[in-house]
Image: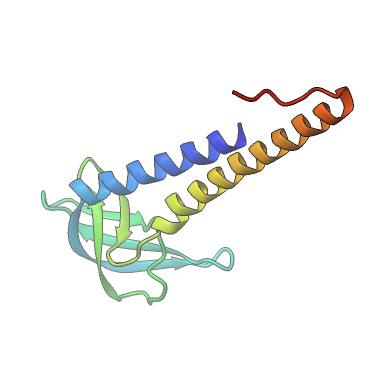
Length: 132
C-alpha cells in the first residue's frame, strides 16, 4: 500500500511537470517579496501574462537566491497563472524521482518481508516449496 502511494505521488509530480513543460509560457518576472518564515524562503514574483494581465504569485520552487527587485525568467501555466516556477530550477528530483525510488524500495521491502514470512512458515509447518 505504501509503495502504491509513493508511486502515485511520483506519477502526479510527473504529470504536473510534463503539463507545465508542454503548455507553460516563459516570461520575465521580478521578485517583489521574500518571506522567510523558516529556513526556506518563499519568493513572490510579479509578471505580465501574454494577455497583458499583471500577476503576483508565489514561485512553486525557490530560485536558490535573489533579492527584491531582481529579474528572473519564469514559466507559468496559461490556464492557471498562479502556477509559476523559475526557469532553470528543476525540482524534478523532488517531485518525481524521490517518491518513485521510495515506492520501488517499499515494494522491494514488502516482497522481501513476504519472502521471509513464507520461508518461516515453510520451516515451521515442514511444507516443501512448490516447484513447477
